[in-house]
Length: 145
Image (cartoon, rainbow, N blue to C red; front, top):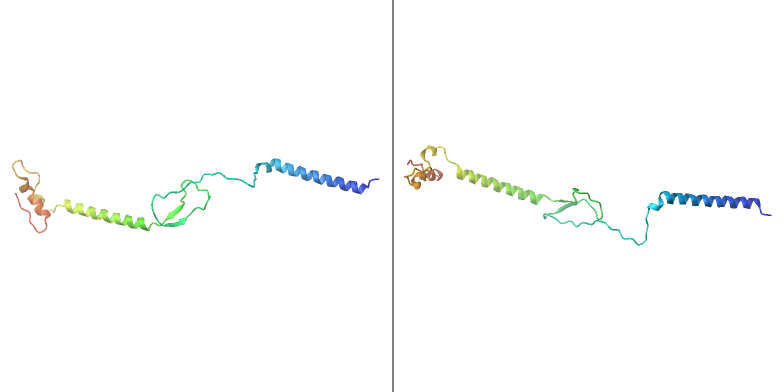
């Protein structure tokens, strides 16, 4: 005659295996089937090469290899000392050009009534505009025509 304790232990063990199998099947059905795994896989993605628009010294890199970078995010930070010095030099050149133009077109007030470059039809332009040249030349006094 079979042992009733042994039979009860086998039924309990069978029930545990059936419940474990049902739990594993339930997990696979709900979550496990969506996970892919392999031992020999290749990942395909968008790799973009960065090309500089200006030359400069890199101070900081804000992204690592294979990191997700969104549009508009700064990837590298360049040293702005060269660009600041070039901007200051350009501002100085502009200021110097403005001073030169103002100097060329400046008419002293003491010469204003003494000359006119709107030459009358019979007058020679050299005599009419000589007072303007005299006023622009330092050390010469204006002459009336």
